[in-house]
Image (cartoon, rainbow, N blue to C red; front, top):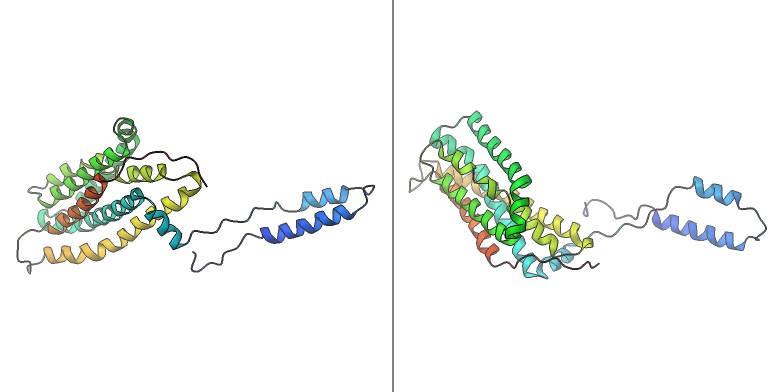
Length: 262
């Protein structure tokens, strides 16, 4: 948007200049003149909006991320977790189809279990655990569950094991809400959009980069050209990416609510 759209103030500058000239003209009029015409013009004129705030530049976003170790850790956790999560989803279908001959209906059932369990987790489990454990501890637990899920997928020895691994989504789905809550408590109310949008951008970047890495890796692991027999190696690599996020989250400080500042 910043590259292709021109920054405007929504006509606020022109309306403010016109309002200033109207006020000067009104001040020059005698006091005995009626003000009915001016009041009717004010009612007919459109509402004047304040000028829009300028969008933050990349340097401002980089300065915000490097201003605190919490922001740096949150950025690293968001990127590697997104890298591992998207890589797991992109490689899982091919892995299950090659090893257990999963059909599209079985894979759809697996995704349905993940979606329902994840929704239940965010609606009920997280509100119960956050007051007792805190976001930082719950983030570490969620990343441990995410790593265990990926590694359990990679060493699946039967067709029912992926369903067992999918049950760990009840904890692994809490990674994103926890990291968003930690970041939200470190900034004031006027910086929420910039920081949360930056986290979304980092996660989206990881979602774009991940298939470029894990799709050819999965094709290589499932081919006959591999020097070792481990069809779930690409899924295990997704778990190693999440393991980097786990190591980073352990060194992060607990979230503390910052005072409101502009």
